[in-house]
Image 1 (cartoon, rainbow, N blue to C red):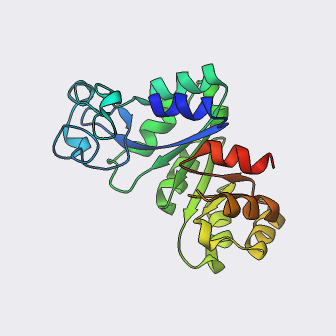
Image 2 (image 1 turned 180 degrees about the vertical axis):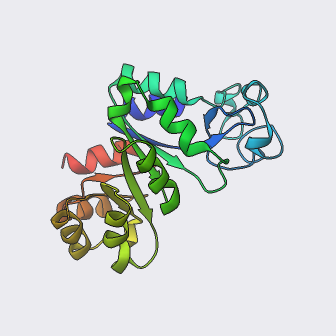
Image 3 (image 1 turned 45 degrees about the vertical axis):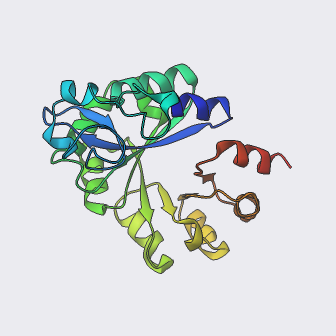
Length: 220
């Protein structure tokens, strides 16, 4: 949550985070399917209950300044988005837990913050399931392969955004996406020159580890 708050302070208008399912069916924000790299826990996220996950230190790996930071829940993230007036990109990770698509759709249903959410995944089956469960939720296809098939695949599964890796983006891909009614969001762009080039080419959004660099580059 400290990272999310800092991103907003630096000018970010949307935040991307990764989701996993706990053993007892609660959704939490953590990148890896295992706990070792970013917490003082061990084993799979899905092997632990929410109460167990919430006891872990998820900040010390980055800096002692963030010691005691907890793994956020989806509910906390949604509340934050509403209070900070930001949009959320929620990525369903591979191996994030059986049933996470249904759990996510259920959690979003009836929440006013749901209109601020785009569900992302590299897995077309996850996005297709989300769409079958709720056709209103916006989805985006993450892509890092040959871009020749990207637009067709995104359209086939009913996604409304295409999110290719930065080095896969070209003027022709942007034009193809836009002509088929898709927004194009790209990741992870950290160099100011690259940010400016992509913005000038017409991308609809840029994911970065450094939101202040994006803001500065776009304001020049």
